[in-house]
Image (cartoon, rainbow, N blue to C red; front, side, top):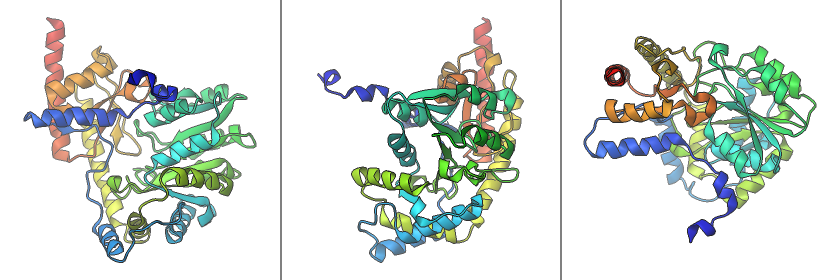
Length: 396
């Protein structure tokens, strides 16, 4: 019965493998296994106390009702000031739409701009929801491979070759999930040159903007003439360890903001009031916690990269941003999905197959180092031992 009643579009809607692997890992934990979680992309730190207190106070002060759909004015103003300061561009509160998490900005931007048959150029490997949503609205995803030999940066020549009359949107993600790659200002300038003056919008996913280890992450919106052609996606989940708060935002041309606000009206009405108050405190309060978190991520990054490179058959580049490594496991001669399943079963380490992020992810795994140094070292040791057993089994 049910196969005949679902809308056809549901066949095109994908999922996020990290949550599927998390569910498998939790099921194994219920049987008594000690699983080390390197699969889920969320900081393992607590939300800073000042942010929590601001939300508690907001609840007690009556912030339990509807708010204006695009967000309360004070938060939109704080976001506008923050983005103006960090990207070096003028931003008005009317250009900001607050949403329950960052994903709605992806969803609503694609719904607003992409018609059936339109092409959307997107990174591969890349966050799987990009392609899922493009297919859902009838668009055509055009993957642009991120290759290890280019340090997982977008190949501008390949991008140029794939821009055509049907191109409606280009999705950028820097710092990038799953590779940890960061686009340089020069690379962004080359991309901007390709799209300026064309009817192409860049959706710039900058959710990891503050999690970089050398210098600062550049934004294509900061380049001359690109602000009007860019939608900046950002939020509080990664920088402030607020994944469960569901608080994100987009910065865009007011005409796009008006349409995305309409989608918010028809879907969510508004973002929870007390979380928006917490967002104001996050942006305007002390910034010690985010800085400390990045420094701890830097230490963990170095530990996991060194550990993985010590395992025969694995090579791992050092990521420049976010909190993921994307080691090359092709020399092991095992498909990445099979290897990820094997490591969960035999090493009790939860990781993701590179193909969870696109077909160019074959030959790689994604590991999140949002875990303690102790657990990272333990996970590397377990992986090494499990691969030794696998090698002996394959040789016999």
